Image (cartoon, rainbow, N blue to C red):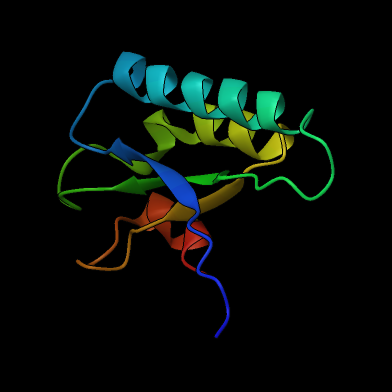
Length: 95
């Protein structure tokens, strides 16, 4: 039997403010960078950030810079935008 190794994706609620999003993403980046200094073989648990929550609240573009910063730091990014008809500006992210 293989061991189960949990991983963590830090969530941002799209109904929240940009300040709340930045707080979560800053924490994710900080923890991700700290765990990169662990010796080889030790588990690294923080792997990414995601935008979720009520898809009718807030446009993704207000969070775009924060998620780009997370991606540049090496984190994976997941964005949930396909649950309702898209606004035209969201269409480029639904690929």
